[in-house]
Structure formats: structure tokens, C-alpha cells
Image (cartoon, rainbow, N blue to C red; front, side, top):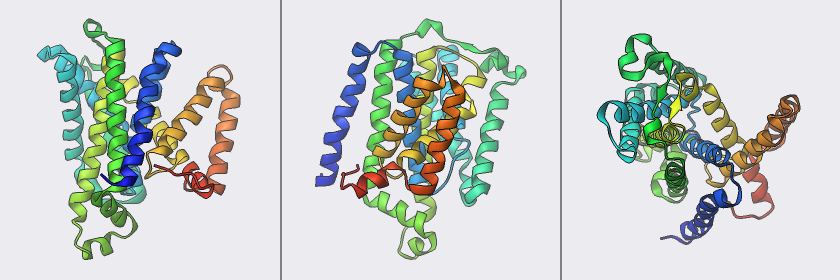
Length: 306
């Protein structure tokens, strides 16, 4: 194990421990769970955008596929929750495989195509004709497996897995290959990197992470509607949190979620008009002065960023 990776794990383990202990100090478990969901999604966006340059506006499609894969496994196969989570993650990866031809696109074309794919799968699961399978637009109720404490603990494991994946990419040859592809795919291919395979692996890894936390979300809330799990807010927030903190690092999404989602819960719920103003000003300041996110500022101050 390299010294950098060892140092990263020394930082990661206390963070995961803090997430596990917070419910005993702060009793709003739903809020803490939402922090974990957005942090995990931001790390997933981090993988596909920070290391390959693909901006997934429709990333919520993987999240929703994971939630419905979980629900179908519970409702029709009577699978226990942990097995159903595997089914939900598999559904997201399968959806990712179907969408791999989109990786031939780039820039706004990929972003728009990805968004269209998410809208398409949302329309499919909410179709009344599929009510016997997905419950259509009428919502899913899984109250028989409602286990908020256990599902919260599993969410921490999923979050740790997502951060571990990012740390691996930061310190592995495969991660360096992805960075090379992002900077110049032609030169990377000439250097012997299998560009297509590397992009597909990163794409499916990000789909797996979104599917796992989507399935975990379905388990935690137990009652949800298509509009909930396919809400564009999941994609938008995850992207903004990752970009605000800084991509291609595990630290960046953590900073983005803690600061922006924390700000939203402090002032956004009671006085949304002020939140929108402050939120907009923060994003403008970031784009103008810190285009590489808050982690670039930390590096200037000599602070090690994992």
C-alpha cells in the first residue's frame, strides 16, 4: 500500500466513524441519511466526470433504476433487503450497459442524451400499463421491510465504498489512465491505453454506486413514487456538490455536500428566497475565482487533499 493511499485511509476511516456516531448525537436521522445519499451520488458523479470528463445530467436514471430494481425484487421475488440491493445495483449496471453507446458522444451531446435516457426510464416505470410490475405512477410501498437504523448503517458502507473507489482511482494506474484519457484521448490511445474499455469501466462503476444508494434509499424510505426517485434534483445537486468541492478528489464532494446541503438545510427550507440568492452568488464566485473547486484553494494553502 502506498504512503498516499495509507494517509487517505487514515482520513477516510474517521469520517465513516463520525457518520456512524452522528445519529446518537443528532437525532434527525432522515437529514443525516440525505447527506449520505448526496455524498455518495456526488462521488459517483466524481468518477464519471472527474476522471473521464463526461457530465451526466441524467445520473438520476441510475439512482431510480436501483430503487425500482430493489422494489421489484422485494415485491415479486420476496428477496431480503440485502439481496434486493444487489438486484437494484444490477439493474443500474444493466441500464449502464445499455447506454454505453452514448460514450461515443462528448460534451453537451452526451449530457443531453444522458438526460433523455433518464427521462425515458422514468416514463417506463411510471407507465400505468406496467402497474402489475412497477406499480406505475401510484407509488411503491415496502413498509414490511422498514428498517431505518439498519438501512442507515448499510448506507454508510455504500458511502465508504464510493469514497474508496475514488481514492483507488486517485492512486492507481487505472485512475491515471482515465486522467490521461480525459486530457487527450488520442495521445492516451497511442500510449497503449484501451480508451473504450477504460471509459466503460468508469461508467459502469459510477452506475453501480448510484444503483446501490438508490436501492438503499428505497429501503430506507420504503414508500416512494417515480417522481421522487427520478427527480432531476438528485442529478443537479450531485453535480453541483461535486463541482463546488472539486472533482477527481474524495475531499471535494465532501466539502460540497457539507457546505451547500448544510446551507440549504439551515436557511433554504425556512427562507428559500435568501438561499437561492446566496446559492447563486456562491456558484458565480466559484466559477469566476475557483473553477477547480474548493480543493484548489486548499492546495494553495498547503493543505493535503485526498
